[in-house]
Image 1 (cartoon, one colour):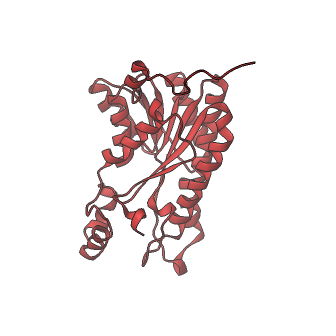
Image 2: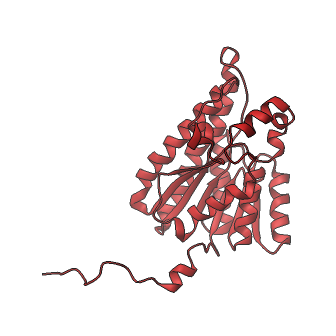
Image 3: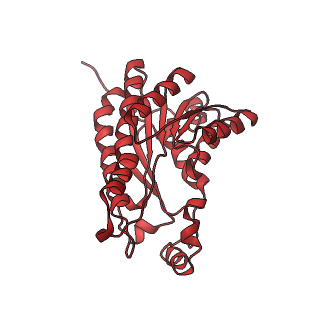
Length: 273
């Protein structure tokens, strides 16, 4: 008859503690990786020893960022990706696998916003946002999972969402954006369940407005800028590095027992709404 050991509490292994946030040698695919959050993520992960592949519709920007990372002593590649084209999604993922020898971690930073009030929403714009924000996530995850499952060593998938996956926004035309980010939150949970038997974790990081040229149009409007700051308990706009820190946690050994989760990087906005 088997008996339990005297103590069920694991011994604290100093080597495991030292590796909690170690991503050295990790092969990371970052579609959408040259936007503000994507660039911070790719650069930070490379600085911590990961090999990164950046992909986006403007190949010159993807390659320029990869070159900057290499010039700083890191390892990086840049490829073209049209997230609305599933053939391009498959090709870019295959190129990333070929360049790095596999994908250990997917960090999906793809996303757009096209603002239209409810009564003005057009089918073409709604479809563009859906294809970019949600459909591409499905097939980036699928193509990455094929490689991860085939290699049989587990893996990580991390999607960048938004507080709009949980919260609507008054007075603005966010139907397409909110619905696709909300759908992505459920996609994270479902993929987490389907990939758990393969030791592949799937999680999401959901920021609020983060410093970037993308939100300049909002910050240049005093009324909207004040609205953003007043509803944020920390009273400021976040920094891209404050988002990619959680990405690294999900990717590293420290995140090995988290799956199907959405972490909101928002200064307390979702806690107070």
